[in-house]
Amino acid sequence: MSFIAKTYVLKPALLAAALALGACSTNPGSGPLIDDVNNKIQTENAPAYELVPINPATVNILHTHEPKGLAGAFTDKRPPASIVFGIGDVVSVTIFEAAAGGLFIPAEAGVRPGNFVTIPDQSVDNDGFITVPYAGQVKAAGLTAVQIQRAIVDKISNRAIEPQVVVAMASQRTQLISVLGEVNSPARYPASAAGAKDKVLDAITRAGGIKGQGFETWVMLERGGRRATVPFENLVMSPENNIYVRPDDSIYVYREQQKFLAFGASGQSGEFNFDAWRINLGEAVGKAGGLLDGQAEPAGVFLYRREPRDVAAQLGIDVNKYTTETIPVIFSINLRDPGGFFLATKVMMKNQDIIYVSNSRNVEVTKFLTYLRVIMATGSDAVNLSNDALIFRNNIKLAP
Picture 1 (tube, one colour):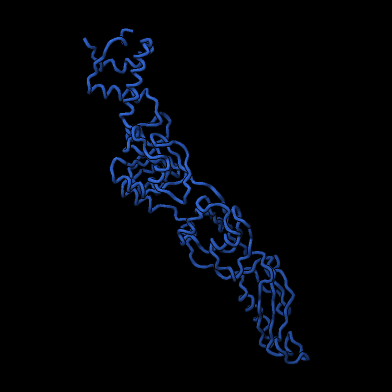
Picture 2: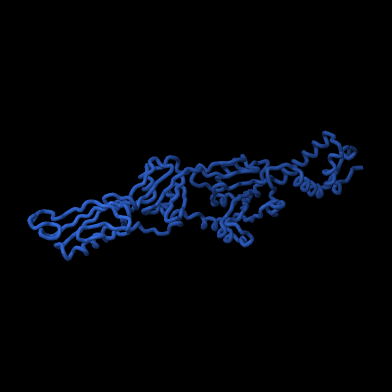
């Protein structure tokens, strides 16, 4: 008890060191101090991470490697080719002859307008053929209407009188485009010749448009076993991503609000919605209530996220130390520097990013002094204070 009863005079230089040690080891807090992050302090079995300062070079790299959307995943920008017939499609074939008395128009019919005959509609069989009188089996699957017409003319030209053939799609059962999910009228419609140049937004419009807000709606395009997903507003704001749809494409529309987390000495801690297609780091800090004036360290604002290996390599990280496809990165920004706010507006947030604002060092000192005053005021048993006393023993000079 005599230890507590005495009056202590702490040397100023030693006070800071002692309190810093005590603050790090005993003070409660909402996360690491700025020095812990900058010095890459890690507990046992904690995952490794890389620390990258946000500067103009970092901003340029992140901007260059932003997701490319549908245009980046599907690089063929040309409109789709002509529609081809598939197994199960119903084909209409009409054959014209220049005069009566030929293969299809009897001589007794005389000259009349439109010397033609229409063959009953038929489906492309499982082997990909249709049957045309006097021409036999004609390949149809995988061919356009013009190619089928030429094939039929070649087979009957030596018997019919200057034949002309018109092939049309009577009922399309292949080469379809599907639009599913959070649309008003999910549909599966044929990529007919008239609509072969539809784009993604056109296909969604055919399905009645989206149900929800644009900023919370995502569009996934699947084509040939590949998938790519973009926010709906990306299709509107970045026209290059509104690419042509092709036969057998599937478009899935769903709703998922983008979110980020904020901890530490921000105005509010918790989970926050973007409520927009995209927001920058400055906007995100503002959404979380900014920085607490009496608590935050403006130079200790950190953005936690995982970056793809190629982006991490561009940022100067030795990716060979990691076996994962993404690298844990903590981006640091100094908002004590007036220019830091300009940089914050250039860094785009990603879904599930984490913002952490460190406490000021002065806050940690104040907390520990408060803790010490409470202990001395309550007159707690010196035995219970032995651990704290050991921290200060060599840095305290008793008053005479």
